Structure formats: C-alpha cells, structure tokens
Image 1 (cartoon, rainbow, N blue to C red):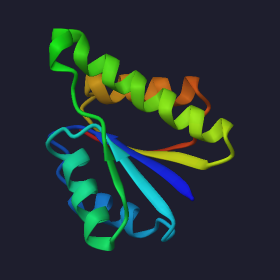
Image 2: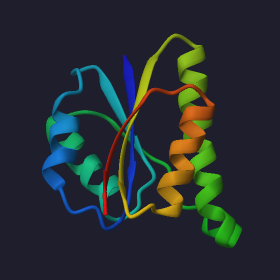
Image 3: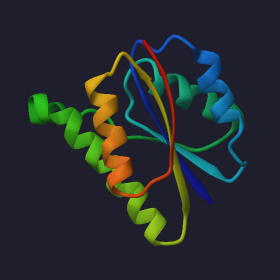
Length: 122
C-alpha cells in the first residue's frame, strides 16, 4: 500500500495536471487531502472515480485561524508515521501565487522528508 497527499491552492486552474497525477498512482494507493475547495476536492473526486480510498483531513474550525496550519501538521505527521511503518508515501503540491497554506504544507512535507512533486503557477 502507498499513500499520496494532494495539496494546493484553491484557485489552481489546471485540473488536467491534478488528474494526471492521480492517474499515475498505483492501484494500491490511498489519497489524502485537506478537504479544501480546488486541488484537494478535485484530487479526491478523481481518486474516488478510480476506486482509490480517500482520507479527508478537514480544516479544524474549532481552532479558528490556527485550524489550517494545524490540519497541515496532522497530514504531514500522518504521512511521516505511515512512512516510519514501512508505507511508501509522497505528496503532490499544486501552488498558485505563493499560497500561504500550500507553502506551509510544502515546508512540513520537506521537514518530515516526504518526497514532494511541486507544480507552480502565478
């Protein structure tokens, strides 16, 4: 089994890039995302259409403005724990115009040594 985290800007415009990334995943993959509009939800929909399991880690509204960064940390920690247990993990980031939340997720992945494939646009 493998795990792939999808994250990115809500305003990412190239759905083909997201679809192509999901379509490259092996059949034993699970897709993880933060349940935000845009990249996250689209990746989850494509994964479900392929029959892949999807794990949504939603914004922690009870934490107010800290909810997004806390959610990002939960996702990075979850993938790092799975990797420590022997699961192959990686992430796909689709970042538009230096989105603060996406940049934070990218930093957390790199801090946890999770391989990340990043696509950027302005």
